[in-house]
Length: 635
Ligand SMILES: [Zn+2]
Image 1 (cartoon, protein in one colour):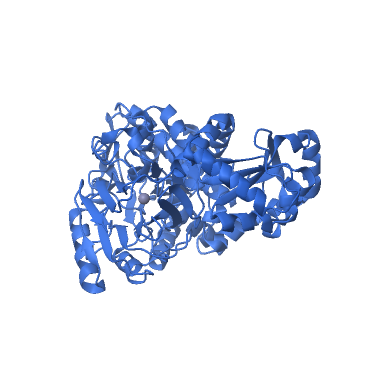
Image 2: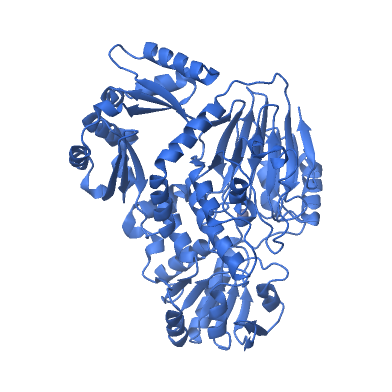
């Protein structure tokens, strides 16, 4: 008998002892980080909700109670009874019964009304029907990504459960080593921006944090073949943690599965969905540009199937000696600072991923309050000594003025933007300005993946700033549903907009390196009354940067035609998703507790050096500006 089986037998005996007489336990099993307890008395657990709480604190585990299949009521009957318990205003759109686990997935427009105060309605459901309810939000804007991911996971339910059981056994295996150390190996994004990837290792465990590509340098991937990473075989890695969905952090996660990795990915639910959207688009773009994609779309599905979603603040066992907690990073939807607690009070490391320290319209600022942190691995994108950004209020004022001026001339405003993050921030500025009469009301057309990315934002309002969240909760006030917003679905529609009245167009790609923004440039470029408005960083070598620098004759189509850009070309910065130099310093300065060591990564040579020496001199922490493939030993 394996040790995990012994462990489960002992747990079952302990749980039976702890529970009041007459409450049965039919089996216990690990599913990923959770301990699942099957019982013939689910209604008792629902009635006395301190039973689960008591077990969880006694056993120090996350516990899920599920009904034994023998006590389940018929789905047809349960459906009617659930609909009687749940208030009509919840807007239930789907009920999906899974007899194998006794779970019923309830999809509703207002999940809060299905949950009830302190979970009261959920308990009422179990008390009535015995099934364990799980609630998901019906996307307020239809999202093909969310629908596809949910359908796919439903279809793969059985295999997913096998994966979770296997991962559960891995996490709860007996520790083999008495040795104690913590190491970090840098596999990418050191003294460069792009291909973020690190290995956190202990004698027992290896965790890969992020696995991104390097935009504009497709051949340069993280050093995955290093002995600390996949060099010793795919089973060398216990877990993958993804901080956020941007491709420079996520693009090569599916590649791990092509190399034979078969373990879990821990990330937030919105990051999982955005990763699906962005990596599939990444394959699409590679194919269109005639490059061989590094993996097939089947590998994206593998990644989604292996994802174990975590909520901010959940402390989760991911290995016998490692606990992971994700915290809001304020950068894009679902973005996280990943905090690792190693051993029993042995050592703590936090990886910032990409952060924004101040509040924005979309998100609260990044969390920098932890129980303990000895080492911080920190992004340095704007770490250079002069990397200060315009105040967002000033940026918004300038944006509104330029929109008003274009409208007065009867022109259009074309804004190239990334699908995720900046687009939604700009949408919120425009929606408020129109509502308050600061700019004239006019159609705002969204092209490329912006609409889909916005739909994903509205599916997960819990991850947005609280005032925005409550507006989405009260459906009628959802700013993303304002009448002015229109989803562009065809080339003809673009032509109509170009021939029509003043309007605003938000379109991908953000640096004009392809995508529908190229069609818009062809249509609107020659119009001197229209404005081309940059709101994001334009990298060296991109068309956006060339136009910013004064280029006015631009090749379009297959490069055979040129278009003259007679539009006004303007730049409004200050909408970045990254902290600027002051934000990065404040993040460390106000961090609780102050870390002993900071590794400055994810920035060009100058930025990491500047930030590293700045933090060392002004804030009295030991700092490093590592190169790729360095290993640091802590402890
Ligand atoms: Zn990012």
